[in-house]
Every structure is written in structure tokens, then in C-alpha cells.
Length: 497
Ligand code: BES
Ligand code: MN
Ligand code: ZN
Image (cartoon, rainbow, N blue to C red; front, side, top):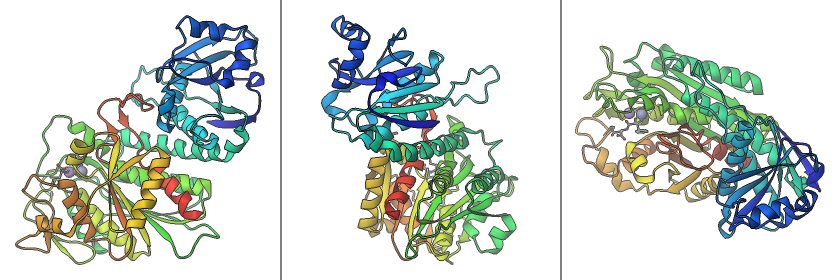
């Protein structure tokens, strides 16, 4: 999506649809007054007749009949004006973009406001996000599909729009990688194998000019990654340990951001087999890995001056004659032994090796993303991911980036007492507890055994990476959200300034 910024009057801007926001109850904003007189009061007549509504996501279209440069005017409802925040604006932008596509339009001009609670930069980011995320179509595999065309050009206009140029460009790069991440997560598991994910990463790395490496099964085994080896051995599709390295000139030497993402390309549970109902959704169990890879692409394309090391362990978790068993004891890369008590608690195993690998490769600040526990879905639903951290200021940094990015997180506790849950009779620890208690927390506490020294945080994105049903906001459909890409890109931006 091409982005343009036009400082000043919107009536000369050429677009298929020129948009202004309307609060509920409906009233023409200051920015629409001039437009209203150019169209001879038609907008205020629609308000008077109750046809132009300010409810969130409600769009009213009017043909301009050549009275302004844009073909149509759209009034986009943003709901109660006093409550307007960036996510509501994203929802309005998503609705406008979808409606524009429905009427055959490809270009949108949005008039930024100067009087509300959101800065022009915040408005620009939200509008870019909603415009690109809203019309995303997950039905790519339908042969008779009518794919929702994407918006090709977005113009931000109005007084002060000039200040939004940088932010808008930034957001457009990040959101394009967010949609590429969604494509990966939505892809079926027969197509998106660990090897195919590694190929995707290699192509992306070539595109943005960063380092790429992928280890295969023998290299993973001989490196001492016994946990990743164990999980992967039930599948004929071989595992990969994917790494990306972004080392820009002029970056801080004292900081290496270590991004780690769980990439189980299909989680059947292994011998501790999952029930059949909705098992197909476990193709999304690589959402953390996909987000880490795609975010690294965005960070490199933006040229942010921060060093990044991304480590993504990728494999399948299947039952079979070669599958690892409950009762197996495996040795992770850091030498600790783990008794496998449930083969469906596989994410923490592959992350154990990947986290230790990232830290021993020099990562100073680590963040992992993983669709780790079903209990996180039950506890938090589809809007907030759970945040766990061993360092207060690192947690604050991540929370700040999350809030600004639209990928929301909620802090969870991480106390040493939870280590009791994973004490094993036979090994240094076990990978699951038989008590139905605190499962996201003990999973995080398990990961902590493998993070070494220094700040680390874990995001359990089980509820936010993949939607079973629409959220009813700017994520208009179900399926992958690309959760984490916007958050990680914002975090990298904050670390580099
Ligand atoms: N990938 C799942 C977690 C998951 C469940 C993500 C539902 C998204 C939606 C993970 O590997 C898993 O199976 N976790 C188990 C662990 C348990 C066996 C200790 C869980 O949370 O039920
Ligand atoms: Mn599992
Ligand atoms: Zn899993």
C-alpha cells in the first residue's frame, strides 16, 4: 500500500473515497464543514435525517458528483467521541477499507483531526493499521474465491498531516509484514512445514539483506538440542532451527535484542494426543515463530539501528512409531534434564533449547512469543496476551510498546514458588504438572530455567495469535492476526532511539 501525505485542504485530493470520522451521536466535525458546503449541505441533511450515523464501524457513503476531487465522501462512525482511542479508529479504518473494496475502490483519503485526544501521528498509525488489516482475506485456498482487493493507495490529509508522514510510512511497512505473518499462520500444515518456513525466512532475509541460517535434524542433534530433537522425532517432516541476524551500522553495541518464537507447524499433541474437535486450529501453533521472523523483516526494512538475533525452532508434534514418549528424559542444550510427563507440553521444550541458544549467542535482552497454553485462551480470550518477565524495566518497555502498537499485553506473575509444580522425581524438572492449576505461569517458570542471565520476557499469545471467531473490530474475520509483529517492531524502534 502506497502512502501519501497532503498537508492542508482535502477537497483537492483525488481518491475513490475521502473519509472523515463521525462521533456518536452524529455531528459533523470541524474538518467536514468545508466539505459540507462544497456538496451544498448534503452531509448536514443526512445528519438531520438520521441517516449519517456515528456508531462504531458504521459507514455512510455519498457520491460527490464532481464537486470535489474525490469520487465519494465517506462518514466513518467512531462511536462515543469521548472514548475515541486508537483501536476504535483502527476499527473505523478497517470498515472504510472493506466498504471501499466492495464498491470497487482502490484508493482512500483520510482527513486527520486536530482537536481530539489522539495526535496526528497516533491517528496516522491507526488508520494505516486498520486500512491494511481490515480487508485481509484468509480464503486464499478457495478455487472460486473472490479475493478482497487490498487498498493500493492511502492519502492522509488535513492540517498537521505533514507531521504524520514518518509515522505513516513506518506503520505501512510494519503492517505489510503483519499480513505476511498472517499468511504464514493461515497456511495449511501440509504446505507450511518446518522446511518451508525456513525457506520463507531465507527469502525474506534476502529481500531485506540480513543474515540467515537454518540447522537441520542432524545439526540440531549434534549441537546438543535434545529437547527440540525429542519433539521433532515423531514426524517425517524434519525440524529446522532458523536464525536471522540483523546487524546494522551504527547500532548500540551494548544491546542485542534476542527474539525467540515457537514454531510448531502442527501440534497434534504427540502421543498425549489432543481431542479431534478443532485440532485443525493447531496449524497456528507456529504463530510466535512467524511473528518473530516477520518482525525481523520489518525492523530490517525500516533500517532501525538496533541489533537483532532471531531464533525460531520449527518442527511438528505428531504421534507415531518414532515419537517421543511420556516418561522419556531428555537433556536440553544447557545440560538440564527434563522428564517428559506430557508430550503435548512441547512448546516449552523447543523453546528451552532456542532460548539458551539465543542467550549463549550473545542476546542481551530476550523476548519469546509462543502459543503456549490453552489456559491462556481461557483466562484472557483474544485481546490481551499474557506477559511474564524476570526484569521490571524490561517488562515496562514491552508493555509500553505493546500499548502503542495495538498488540495488547497484560502482565502476569512469575514467582519462584511455581517451580514446585514442575519438580520431577527422576530428572531436574518435568515439562507439565498433573494439577489443573496456574498452567501459563508454571510454563513460564519452566522457560525461565533456560534463559541464563539478563532480562527476558515471555508472551503467551495462545489467545491472540489466531481467532476462532471475529473480534468484531478491525480484525473482521477469523484466523491469524499477526499478533506480535507490530509490538516487536515498536519495541525495536524504542530500543534504537
Ligand atoms: N499449542 C498448545 C497450546 C494452545 C492451546 C494454543 C489452544 C492455542 C490454543 C500447547 O502446545 C499445549 O498443548 N499446551 C497444553 C499443555 C498441557 C498439556 C500441560 C495445554 O495448555 O493444554
Ligand atoms: Mn501442545
Ligand atoms: Zn503447542
